[in-house]
Image 1 (tube, one colour):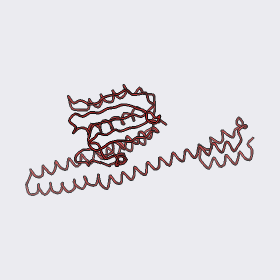
Image 2 (spheres, rainbow, N blue to C red):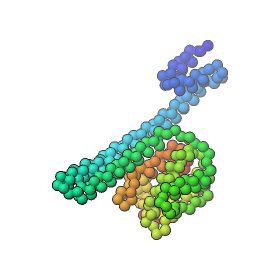
Image 3 (tube, one colour):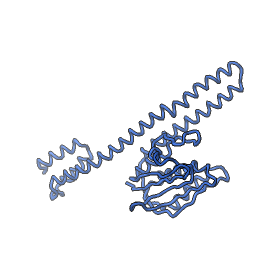
Image 4 (cartoon, rainbow, N blue to C red):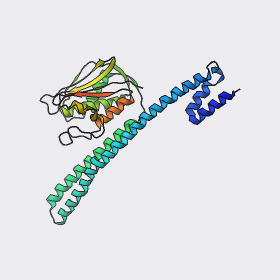
Length: 286
């Protein structure tokens, strides 16, 4: 028999949604008669508050992603597309006057701009997929996992190329292996790019403890950056060094940030100009 108060509570839960209905129905079932109704409501309220907070955080991420996409379309993508249109007209004019050599140069420029646009679109899709993929965490022995990741990166390099990476002892962690591999690929790739001008590039991967928290890091001896601008590194399509000196879409570190935060962790960086950089991240794994 369902009491009047139970009917009222179940009615409220039904308005809140199917999940809430199921939770309060279980709490109000005969097996739980020893649990006072106000405790059941309190438990439900805490659960709903946590769910709302999580959804709000997800919504903020979506809005930030849309804003980044708008910036990209208005600047990074519109520029190459406008260049393709302009240079294509110049190529046609060159062909009309019989200047095949000039037309060929213009068409090479069109191809280059088209490649840049394709890379940018691919980066946008990669950033979106990180937020959509289901998290599948598992226990990982990080040292062999990272060695395997580095070997895959080495095989993607030109023949004879080496990765100047030193591997320090690494712990066991709980993480989604596919997403964590992206973290290391992006951070190590970033370190390779920005230490490429060093006389002897050096990259170190390791772990440490900070304030009782297990922290992983990737350190390089590259060009570094102003510490005051560190937070902007993780915003999509932000390039502290500009796109001419160092090529890239400006999305890699944004992907790292989203993956780490999806694991319940955080990511940050320390650096000084011309003194290398260290990227730290933790894995809370929700």
